[in-house]
Structures are given as C-alpha cells and as structure tokens.
Image (cartoon, rainbow, N blue to C red; front, top):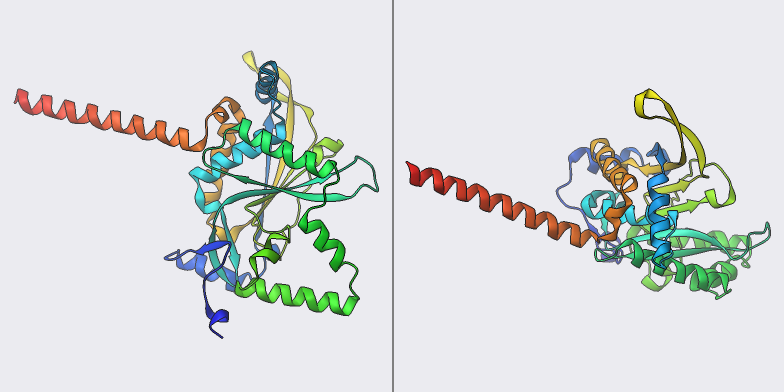
Length: 309
C-alpha cells in the first residue's frame, strides 16, 4: 500500500512549498484539458532565415524547427517552472528537458507517423540540437522501428475489452507514479513539450489539445510561412516572412505572470537567433561574470569613497 501513497516518481521531483493556490488547482481542475490556456505568437523570421543561410555557408544544416527547439531550451533553462507537470493531483519538476515531435517516414497520406524524442542539455547549442534531431529523423525515415512503435502496434491488436482494461491499468499506474520506467519510456507522451511542425505541409497552425496520459504540459504547433505587413521606416508598410505558433499550456504548472514572462524571453531568442550559438550554460556563465565585475566595481568605488573621507 505504501506505493500508492508515495510522492516519488521516476520522471520527476515533487515540488514542495508551492503557492497554496497552485497546490489547489489540480483538485479544482482535475484534467489538463479543463486547465488549458492558449497563446498565439507570430514571428518575423527573416532574421532566422539569414541565420540559417549563414549556417549553410559554414556547411552546417540548421532549420527553423531547430531554432524553435533551441529557443525553448534557453527559455526553460532560465524559467524552469515551465518544465513542470501535474500527476496524481501533485506538481512535479521534470527530471530533464525533452521534446517530442512527429515524423512521417514519407510525405504521403498513408505513410506511418512515428514520435521522435530529443533530450536537451544545458550545454547544447543550436548546432548540437540540429545534429541530434537530424539523427532521430533519419533513423525513422530509414524505417528503423522504435520501442514505442512496436508497443503501439502490439497493443492495437488486442481485443477491445482487454485494450480498455490495459489502458485503465496504465492510467492508474501513471496517477500513482508506479509505472515501470521501461514501459513509460515506450509511451511517447512523457516530455517537457510536444511540437507539431505542420508548416512543412503548407498548413496553418491549429491549437492542439493536451494528452491526459503522460507528463506533457505544453503543446506547440508551428504553421506555414507567409507574408505579413509590418511598420517599417517612415511608417511605411513592409512585408516580411512570418510564422504563427499556437501554444497550449496547462495553467496549473505555474501562474499567468510567470508564463507571460517566459514567452517574452522565448521571443528574445526568436528575434535574435545568433544567441543560440551559445549554450544556456555559457550564457549563464557570462551573466555571472558580468555580475561579478559589476560587484567588484561597486566595491572599488565604495573603498575609494571611504578612503577620500
């Protein structure tokens, strides 16, 4: 019985001392899809396109999708509370930063879809992320079966009553945090963020639901590239390449002020993708160095003032 009352999970660490209102929200809004908030963000991507062309001139292949993922890594590193999830009416921090995304092995109606996962590190630059994502995508397009694909194909063949019971059991284990790690790793619903880049299909970005099973609290869709008007010099209209991001977030993971500020930081990296050439750890080290220099100058001024007196 102790397992059913334990707060430990293999995929997260229990958040302690949270705001009382945040602690109550999983009991008021028991499911993710009754706790969602929606954001629409549009981005002028001409700076990103220039950044991608510069990379290709260096024989480095970076895509728009890679830039978005790298910007998310930088944001989560600076704003760790967005990397949380609700399970069993409790709030947890993810143990790592991971992104799930859909890959079709062929661009045809009947082609199978597979879910790829990329785990991110504070030491990752946009080049590291691009290389890792390409490796994942290539393995899927080469028709290399993954453990989650094998599990889905096997379970889908079960009789309806057995399938229903199996999923009930999985949900129960998920609620109490007692699911075997190997089984959890085979279910492609456990991640920091789920992304669907449907712009590659020429489609507009829709708002997507969240999955009740698993630990993903944020779903992002990326739409097609289109021309949009912007105010330029002398108030003249300029047409620039633009994309829309539709973001669905479980608001129970943190308050609205924290989310809004986090999206603002994400936008900084989208506007200036050259910042992604440095990893989050490098940015933090540089920031700490600047703070130290400021503090040393402050102490020097204070000592000079005291000596003059």
